[in-house]
Image 1: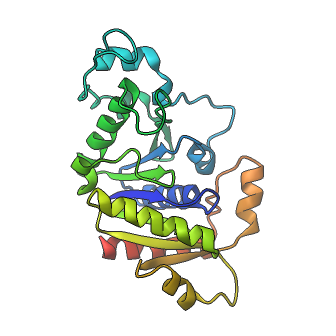
Image 2 (image 1 turned 60 degrees about the vertical axis):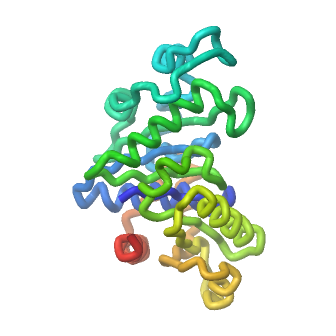
Length: 254
């Protein structure tokens, strides 16, 4: 199972990534949670203290230069297929059966740059997606920056997290367009922060055919946990019910 989770900032994509990781890890699955959003927040959502220093791989300059064999520094020659198979074991942070990798962003040359750090990150994502017998959950920004045509087929499902609102829905439609451009065909949505009386049929219509895997209710306890730097996994029967339904829908969709 290889999932890429995207959506507009603030919709709860990181929350969904953390909840799925916790849920499947409890079942004894081999889960790798990958924070592929430059604005990294997945560690906190998993319950890792803000005092814990996790260096994003994109900031390991000496390591990147060594692995890519960059010549002449940034802007020079480098390998596009560096060795990455040992990175998950070497640099992941382990918590409750989950291995967390924080990628960070490729900052040199702007978005989509062809640079050593970008080459290493994309090679790492390719390795993770093509490694069998693992659940990989990619918490992404609102795009497909870390994915390419060569690995798109390995993504089981691209999940777009949306909340009730036009801007969130428009982002979901944009993510679908970008994903389809690189060959990801299996795209679905999870609606977060729903409240009583919400018209899901109307939301489904606005999503223009993107299937809805499930919903998560608005829960002030999650916001409170975030303020306290605690995990969004509240371990309540209600939360388990919702995430179990989404999990089952993902397995059925995949």
